[in-house]
Amino acid sequence: MFLLCYPKCSTCQATKRTLDENKIEYQERNVKEENPTYEEIKKWWEQSKLPLKRFFNTSGQQYKSMQLKDKLINMSEEEQIRLLATDGMLVKRPIAVDKEHVLIGKKDILSYYIP
Image 1 (tube, rainbow, N blue to C red):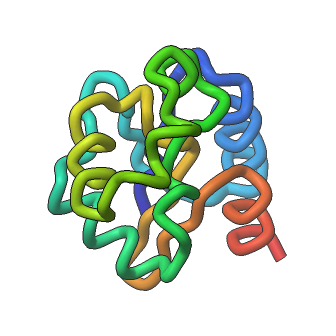
Image 2: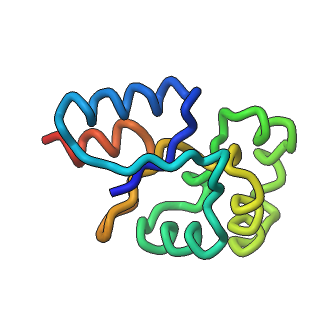
């Protein structure tokens, strides 16, 4: 599994700490330094079966400064995926990706990996 994170994010830090305490192995990927590609986001979205909006970091400064709350409803899924691929700070985190699952957010990740 790899964990898409932003090192300064307290939620990412807490998620990693809990995974470490429970000896769950993962590869960390910094979302700011290695932004997900269009192809990755599209694949994860399809695999997750979640609404595309779940992939947006709705509490982030980028999201707010771009006024995406009002703009996303008028954008196609294709446009939204392309937008996510432009800047890692627009992407919700943490995201855990393995061969079978795409889990978004601390609660979903920990409830799956730590029974």
